[in-house]
Length: 278
Image (cartoon, rainbow, N blue to C red; front, side, top):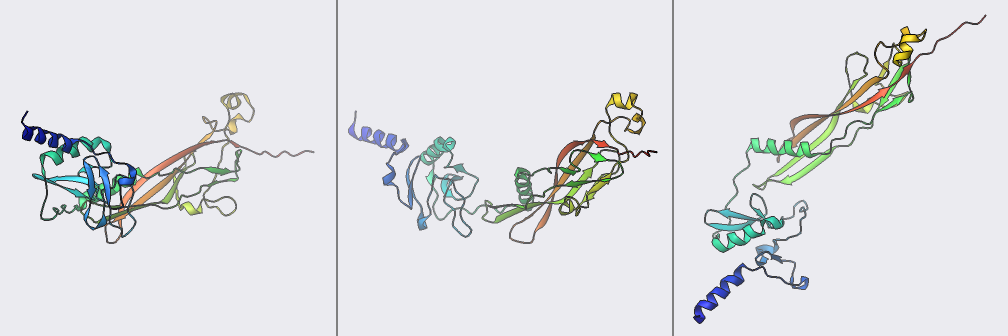
């Protein structure tokens, strides 16, 4: 084989093969990528270890972006994620086929208002929105003619901050603003401030039942069966947290919308009957 041709083939094969170096060969500004060692200008690196930058810190170069017939490294998506091994072959192939961009990186297009709202909703839906944990007093069962207290522990505010592809910052926050309670006896659903749903005696989320709950046999055969609810053995109490979200991108906060999370609990109600003795 011609020596010059053999050398060219060897060089091409070497450019496609991953370069494996011991950990000691890495530095603070140069790291190992699927195609070799990458060093970024200004000290930023194409770090393969995921991590969110601190506020004010320049994020690491992470994505290989194709711009026409050339490629460049970017800290923001879209692009081939160098932290995800699934993109290794695409990064290697792209760098082999295309040239590196020159004259400065292309400027990512600005993110539109609709895209911001769409992304804010994705974040809102991804939040761990807790439902209420229902606590009732009296705990074992209610008594007709006396109030039952419902209490819940409202969760704290949830927040999220991220850098969008155009370099602007999106913030999303969510908190519980209302508590809806259905007492299960056909009365209207009540709307309450969650911080007012505390235990006796300070709580204001209360309800007084008029009929006790009974098993079907009791309703049918017991002398007091007529005092029972005609169908229920327990009242199906439901409590709903209304989570409200807001978002902003470098300006004032904007309302995003609400999501609901629901909990249910069965509740027995009895009665106290007084008798006169001679």
